[in-house]
Length: 450
Image 1 (cartoon, rainbow, N blue to C red):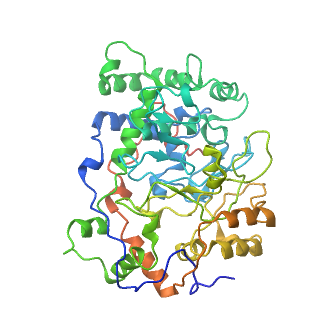
Image 2: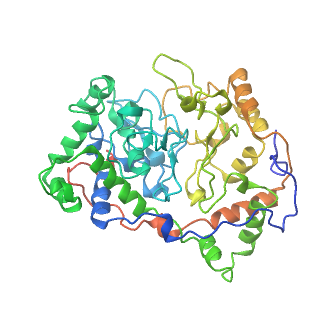
Image 3: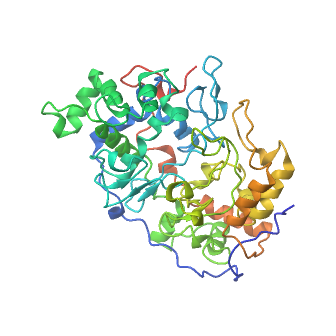
């Protein structure tokens, strides 16, 4: 059993008071593209409008809500078939979900920055000059051209997921198209969604006002929708006004003493910055850190396992097994539970387990139903098949990059947490545009349901 005063990590011990890695440069305006306000206002409405889901019951905001700091406040959420918001979300008895969404809902801060060239936990969407669309995605050459950014391309893949937004089998026109493999082109899922939006007069008017090419009689394209949503996200949740940002821009504005000491640990002895580097505290790379696997995992339709091998599912390279993208740490203290499957809802415990993951995996196995107090909406499924399987745990453990331990005590962990709090940005957490009182479709704002 790991204790809070005994934590393992990969790097050598150094003095707490010294920085061994340089602090990042401050965030600057040129790290972002300008955002058109009309497009962002349009994207705000679309973000909160369930019109983009197959059954018209889920919006982007359902799983990325400002009340939960652009996530959903649970380890693994319920998409299609869910009712309610955040930890209160539950299965609809009339349309009960068959499984949870397989991965934790990621935060949306700073995704409009140029530095973000790879998205999703496994990086299955990335900027690529070799592809006609400019992005390498699961659709490869079939990917539409016309997405303004990788954020635009990313925002619209959840609408194709049966468990997230599309729905299942033949219960709506979008689900039917997805099941038949019809995504692009006339009658494809994206085309059907674009026509839904275009059929609403207010949206047509707003699109024509926001995009010049639509003022000449051209039809609203799916890429127009995704570009507007991306504009909203980029503006609403840009995050560069935290206390740490203020300190980087002017070191005469000190951090609180505990946060300052935690900063020296983060960029020193604890070597967190080895992966959480740069102005957004991420190297944008993939690392196997043996985070616990819960929920359904990622499997093809013909598979019945509950594994999630992360980056390897994209590259096919066994060296990438169980590796996941380094998340940005902006506002991280507000975005738990943490981990690709949301295995932790306490940051002190997360840091302890993150730095000694092998021991943590065995502790999860020993805990039975308690499992570190993870937050899961009630659903009659087995969430712990992987952690209950010794062979599965061994595969995750053997892949981890954490091989050589160091020791941090509980006081040092608390200092790290104090530093992480200095990354909280009140402006970004509050949002700049907020939640609209209504959406043009007339549906429930945010897709919360009854």
